Length: 449
View 1 (cartoon, rainbow, N blue to C red):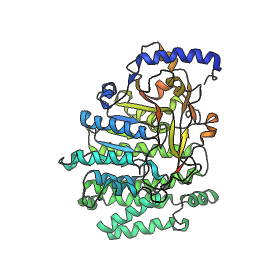
View 2: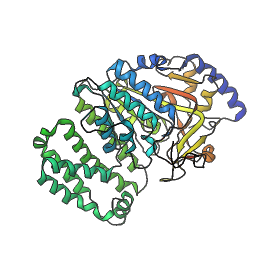
View 3: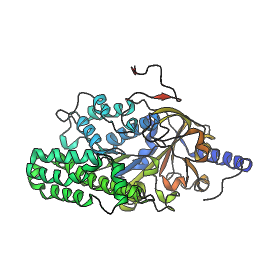
View 4: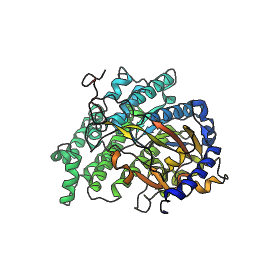
C-alpha cells in the first residue's frame, strides 16, 4: 500500500477526486433512490450488505430498505446475518408465523442475551422483523422469507438444541448425543476455558462433535417426518457444534486460522441455506464490511486471511454476487471499551484525513450511493483504485485512539461493487439496558423508559 499523502498535496488531490465522485454519485433520501443499486443487482443471486460498525442505526435502516426492495422486486428468498444460529432461528420462526414462535418481535429479539446483545436486539431490527412477518402473512410456508444466523460462536447452545431435538424424535440417538457431548462438561460452558485447555494438552472433543453430526445425518430418514426445516435446524446446530469446537481450538493459538475457520463456516452455512431453498434461491447477507468486502483488496490477504465476500465471489462468480460496503464520516455508535463490558453510546470522530470516508465527505453530498461497476469508465475510478484507509469499528472501540487504528488499507472498487456513504450517523437503539452515553449512565436508568 502506498504511503499516506501529506496534508498539503493530499488536500489538492482529495478535492479533485471528490469533485469526480460527486459527478457519479447517486444521492440517497429514500428507498426510491435505490433504483441504480437494483439495476446493478440484475439477476445476481447473492447480495452482501456490509456495515462499518455493529452499532450504527443508519446501516441497519438502509440495509432494511435494500432488503425490502430485493425481496419485493427481485424475489430474494432469505436474509442471513452475522449472528448465532439458535437465536436467529427463533427470529426465523417468528417472522414466518410458526406456532408458539413468540408474542412480538420485541420478545423474540430480547432473548438475544449473548454479548454483544445490541447487534440484533435493537429497535432497528424490530422494524425489519415486523415487516417480514407482515410480508409473509398469506404466503405458502415454502415461500416465506427466512432469517438465519451464519456465525459459529454458539457451541453450547447448539449442542443443547441438538439433544433437545433428538429427545423428541429419537430418544436412543439423544442418549448417544448426550454421551458424546459430555466431553465438553469439564469446561463449564466456557469457550475460553475449552480453548485454553486444548492448547495446553494434546486433547480435544473434536471426534465427539463430528460423531454427533454423523449420527444426526444417519438418522435423517427417521427424523425428516418432523418437517424439513425442523430437521435442517437440528442438522445445522450439529454442524455449528463441530465447527465451533474447531474455531475455539484454533483461536487460542493466534494467527489467521480461527478467522478463516469462522468465515469458511459462514460460507458453508450460506451454501446450505441456498441448497435448502432450492435452485432459484437468492440470498441477502448482512455482515460487517470486514466479512463481506473481498479480502483480496485489503491487507487481510497479506496476513493469510480469507473472508465471506472473497469466498462467495470465487465460488459463484462476480456476475452472480453483488457486494455493498457502507461507511460514515462522523456521528455516534454503540460499542464497548473491552470485550464483555457494558455497552456505551460513543462519539465517532471525523474520519482520518487520508481515508476514503474523509474523501467522500469532501463531495458535500450528505448521503449517496456509489455503484462502481456502472461508472467504471469515469476518470475518477483510477483515483479510487489507489489504496486508502477505510474505517472499521468493532464491538470494542476506543474513539480517542482511532487515528492510530480502525482503518483497513483498501482498494474500494475492488472490495465492493457499490458503496453507500452516510455523512453523519447515530447509534442504534438497543433493547437491553443499561447503555452508557459518552461514559455515563442515561438518566432513565434503570427503568429504560
